Image (cartoon, rainbow, N blue to C red):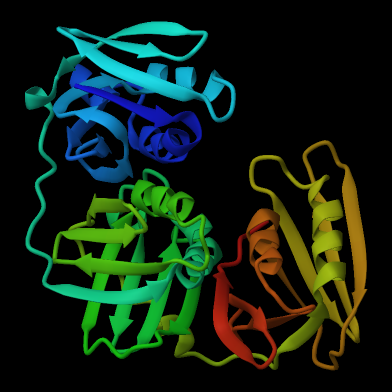
Length: 366
């Protein structure tokens, strides 16, 4: 194997691939990046056997071959080289030489034939979507995914396709985010799949060009997303996402509109004195005023008052301050609309006259 490539061409796909590779591996070769040269095309592959990213780049002066290199060492060398440096890469037995006009490196390598194959099933379904549209949908929901929850189906994100309707749902059991949008082209599909947490995070990082058009393919247990010269693949969570529709089937109090900047700033200030473990704040709704209170075991207290239009009976309800901040910060409009269930079992946060994004927070006891 022998080829030359510009450092600025190699670095972005290499960074994307290395982010997939786990630092601690049971198989040493999984810490490596697979490099294959075929007909002036360099194919880079990185995987943890659950997620895989493959990138293809044009190279010059190429001699065919395949090898695996220590991914993080290779990345660090490329990252610290000066911009626009031309890198010459050549294999010598079980070593690979990297050379520039002023630098020389030798890296140990492992045989490409030992690199594990990422087994994929036949992709029966596919649709197209703009990268900007999908990235926005992911950013509005992914922060709600659970992390290492025993209910493993919550450690991921539900992707629901219904013809030309796209819905993304994420929940950790205490809060839930729903983002709905329309696809430009009808798909004729009706499918619900759960993309794992790490897969969602890596896919979001990959979508750095909002104008790109994505080809999304999936089966019952795999998803594949092609963007430019890269292909992202991931195993799906083999489970059924819980039915969250029941939360809508209850009586609600009239919606309460609050200026988003005022609410966000008040929550941020009040949360400073909230209990560090539970992060609880209490919303007390009175005549045309919202009182936000927080206190902690050191007997410190905070109270904020916000003007609202409310003429009903006085009541109080408590929430995790960070959950409320996450919801409010993800609204695009300047007004946040809070709709609280009559039995105080849940609170909806969304934008007035805009139902694309909904955020639901379950109350807490203080």
